[in-house]
Length: 140
Image (cartoon, rainbow, N blue to C red; front, side, top):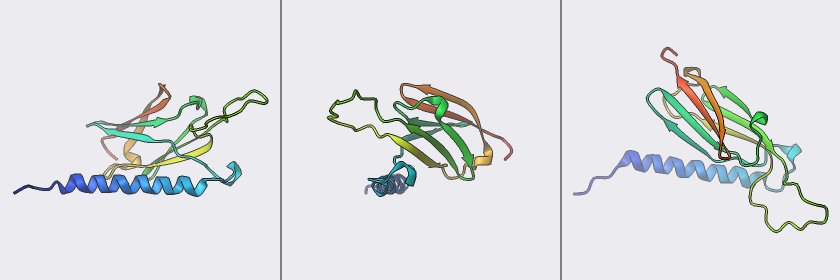
């Protein structure tokens, strides 16, 4: 008799729900001006090791010094803006797939990790990605 991996299925279901919610938020912003609020959310990867948490945020064309990172209860918030690509006057745009404008990405921390138990120890920009490294604090 075959055994089911309910934990794996649960994690997959939660991941799919999170992706669906993210798409819904993106469509809700479609056609809104930047004044109305953030217009896009960059994708993220989160990897946890024994003593650290690494968060990688895809930010092509965003200057690292313009990115704000806030650690709040239960989440990490990354905020910045990507400028509209520079075009010569009279140029025709054939495709715009990389989002632009102001964004805010609220990244919920994995279960069992509190924001007060993390310390930002690394902030690197590599290959169009912001890599945040947090050290887990012993007593939090």
